[in-house]
Image 1 (cartoon, rainbow, N blue to C red):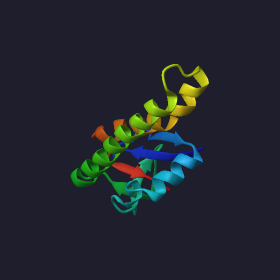
Image 2 (spheres, rainbow, N blue to C red; image 1 turned 90 degrees about the vertical axis):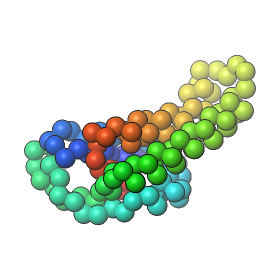
Image 3 (tube, one colour; image 1 turned 120 degrees about the vertical axis):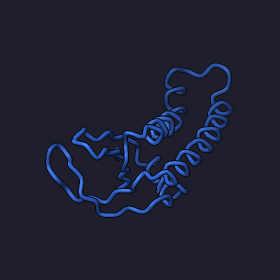
Length: 121
């Protein structure tokens, strides 16, 4: 599992979305990785100042990421509904909806303006 982490400018703990390697690779090859630029940024993490590569969730970056994730959620929803059919088993449902759930979790943090930075590394 790999993490995509969201930070505030306060000493609040960062929030991470754990994604499987295949989802992370897919995101890295998609427009998700092209929105915003990672810049070494000083930030408080657990009370200590660290300098880590972060993408600032400016109004423009946030809007682009929201749009990308929204489009992908629609695409993934259509694919899941087609793939799973009418009566999938619990395991088929969980496996089939994993990427959709991760996209929705990422969107939740992107939309929350409390989070000002994103770490994709």
